[in-house]
Length: 190
Image (cartoon, rainbow, N blue to C red):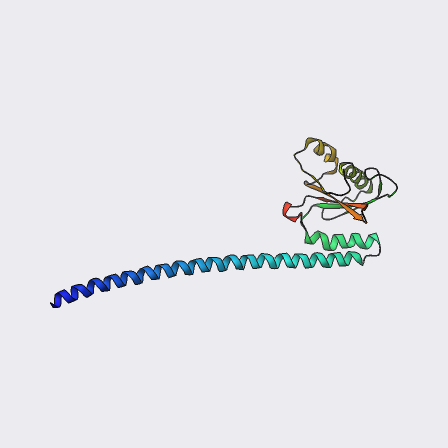
């Protein structure tokens, strides 16, 4: 009888130990799932913090631009604030003559950034080519290296692709064009 009781309880204990082991494995899986969710949310929070920081810096730059009183201050600001904040090879700000069409209305051009064009005549010719490629006053033009016609047009200027041309308007009147060379695609929205 003693052996029967031990045998009966032994099987019951073995079953209880197996059930406890199964519950332990289930709890471990749940903990791992929670840990993965926690890490994912933590990464998401870090990403959001970086985006908020970038937006704050962008807002501060816009405020600084509003305080510029002349073009030399603005160019200095472009070189000191914009170039370090964004990854791009060079930029050109093209001011338009309001009495002409955009593709022929170059008034002034200013080069900035790590690979700015220091020769004023070359900068002016480059700006004219950019205006020819700019076909609209209300949308961005994106030019890629893969287009042979674009390559031929811009080859004398040592252009770093991609080339983005942004319209700058006031009250729907195009007043300038911003050209950005060699930026990363993930910088486009900023």
